[in-house]
Image 1 (cartoon, rainbow, N blue to C red):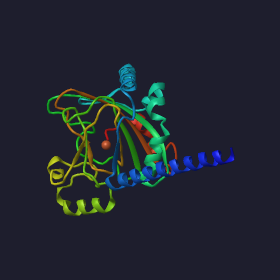
Image 2: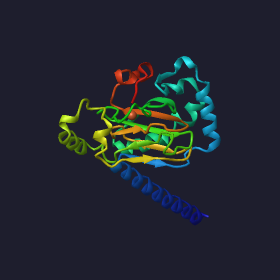
Image 3: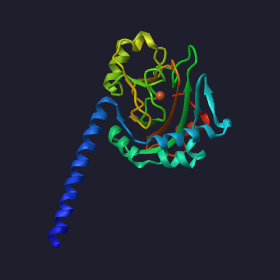
Image 4: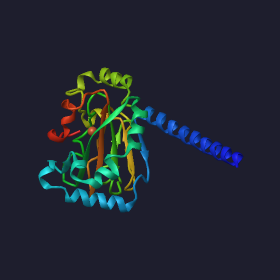
Length: 247
Ligand SMILES: [Fe+2]
């Protein structure tokens, strides 16, 4: 009987070791590229429920940037959003592995973007969110193809050394250190992240990124924002819900 218990513990320990190994490998890949994709994080049924929740959120809380409708603090307005996505602890674990800092949750942005001629994509074009420690987890609630606003990044651009070289090489092209025009970014290789609904993209917002402009259809997504745990609660960075920013 004792031997059986020992074998069971041995197998369980081996399983956890392998699981941790893959978790660490995924984390280090993500640390290198600045993003990682988790497929089938939520099922179709849960995506449907979440879209329905977004559609039911009070219209007064919606801030529109052209065709990009945004509701910050959606976790306060919907228990379902809170339960299925905002409060998921595994996401913060991944984030801490990726940015190598303790993080704390800030807010969940519910986003809905649809086609409009000439409009920029989600986030208003190429940008970095800020130059401080942050982390984001975004889930696609609709299937995302090249047409309906996939997330697009310059892989590896979150690294300070990469950004420094970028800054020096393009010194005279900059008008802002957080927003960049298409012509400048077109000199670099980018990666579009398409995926089935339920796909999660975990990323370091220091990456140069954008939502590709929507050419057809629409995209629903939820995005959790996290910041460095050392940033005191209640400082300006926590005012996202009030400021309804574009990033
Ligand atoms: Fe952004």
